[in-house]
Picture 1 (cartoon, rainbow, N blue to C red):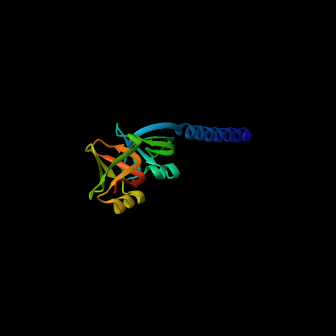
Picture 2 (cartoon, rainbow, N blue to C red; picture 1 turned 180 degrees about the vertical axis):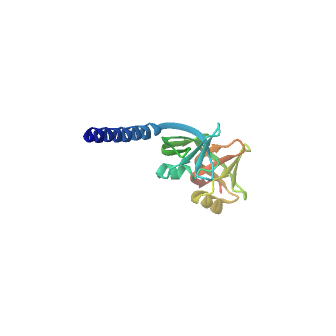
Picture 3 (cartoon, rainbow, N blue to C red; picture 1 turned 90 degrees about the vertical axis):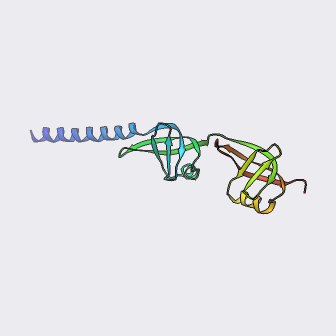
Length: 163
């Protein structure tokens, strides 16, 4: 009788472990979310859902895009009523590559001949462009993001023209 009881407890223990592992596997799934990156290492979707961004190469890049809208794909796990996403790929929504020609002003902007204003992203290449080209006409190539309020150019290359 004792052996039968031990066998039942052992079987019950194995079943509990299997159910736990199955539940953990089922709670993690690949998903694509669209939302705005905040300064708390999170992505907030339009419906107010909050996803904590797990630290990895792509996640570290995404959390530096504060204020920008992203489409992120990765493994989503729920832990303690929190959604955690380990990002495998992402894209910034509203960005495109473009070359613009205009004059660099003192407000960290390039003003094109047709009056469009592009704010220069504050990074190494952007600071270099502002320092070396203030008041000059330039041809700048980079990623353009239209946020609705402003256009931001992340400069990848530039040249002074018509000095």
